[in-house]
Every structure is written in C-alpha cells, then in structure tokens.
Image (tube, rainbow, N blue to C red; front, side, top):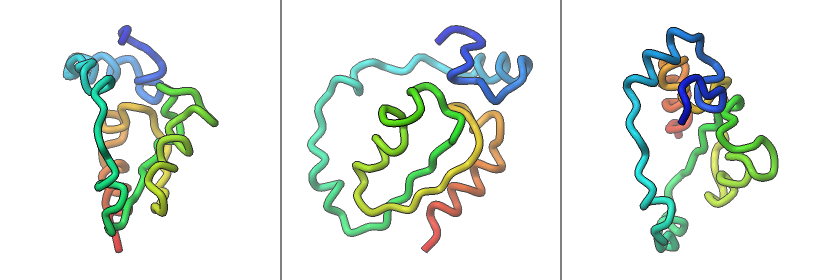
Length: 106
C-alpha cells in the first residue's frame, strides 16, 4: 500500500492517515491462495451479519465490490452499513464499535 492511498485512507485527514499507517503491518499473501473447505461454516445454524463500510473502495463498488459479492456468500444475514473506508477502525472507532454491537444483536 502506498502512503496516502485513498482506497485505504479516503476518510482520514493527512495526520490520521500518517499515524494509522505507521501502525499497520504487511498482510501475508498465503491466505489469499490457500483453499479452505468452508462447507461446515456456511451450514452452521448461527445468525450472520455483514458490516459494510460504504466508502471502502479497496475493491470497486458494485458487482465486484465487498457487498453484495462477498456478503452474498453468507446466505441469510443481517446487513449493517456505516459510512467509512477500509481503515474505519482508525477514522471512526466509536462508530465501528457501535455497529459491531448492532451486528451482534439478536
């Protein structure tokens, strides 16, 4: 990731982008290529939620984006949306916590 990459830090000012970027580490590549058998996970009779940050542009919006492409794999799920980008944990931690609680309610 390049410093200041708007796909990751688009909802942060320069100071927040710099301070949060300094805390991040590289993501390993192996999990992207390992094949997992998720049949048992998808068949679990537990409630599922999907938290969608509407300004996350690390993937293109629409058909190839996070939602609905990724979320649709969950079957029946609760959709929780919030404004924010890919690193909303830095730009809006309180809002993220509130929406995680909302996603977990039943």
